[in-house]
Amino acid sequence: MIVYHFGVVIAEETALDLLSQLMALYADIDRAVAAFQLKSGLRCPAGCGRCCPTADVQVTVLEMLPMAHAMFCDGTAAQWLERLSGASGSGVCILYAVQPADDAAGHCGYYPWRPGLCRLFGFAAVRGRTGSRSLSVCRHNRRNDPPGTAAALALAAEAPCFTHYGTRIYGLDPALGARLMPINAALRQALERLGLNISYAHRERLRNTTAA
Image (cartoon, rainbow, N blue to C red; front, side):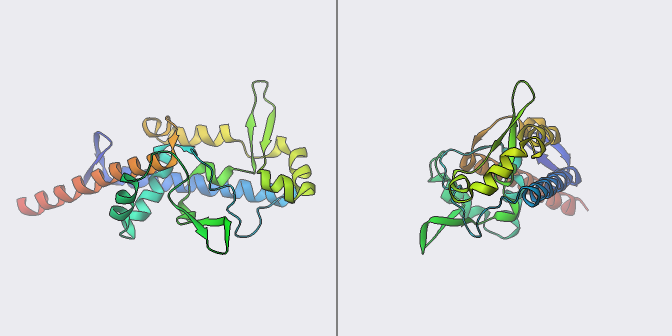
């Protein structure tokens, strides 16, 4: 079976393998973040989501493919595309759902498939030109958990690194992993491009069935 993958005809198994590799990498990120949380004692409050309503979060189309695939699997892709077509490409992530009881808290509608940036934020470091690491701690944790923040900052050299995981994500598919864009725009492109794959694969199945 072949599918149309972003301008190139490739085996369907290759497209699925890309998704599998990306989810495996996300699992590595989650383990690294969990280990750092355990060692430092710094954690997000349960059900917080206060970092999510941040405008213009930048990710790549590649990072959004697992989420787009999940939307096709649960039958909501068309609805999300319609919502995204009427939304600004920038702004707060369209998947963020505010909790009625607290307008500052909320949750992600597709949390298990969230991009690498969302998995790392608050518990990962940025590597400087000299090789030193600077930890990006959420401002809400800085305010509400000074001891945990201090412990995490002291362990910055051992924190997961944005650059390391960004490079690994890019390496899975340089064509889709190079350009950063607003998260809503990246999700829309991921849905559109994955939709092309599915549409092309469906036409090929029909053609092969007719030919047989």
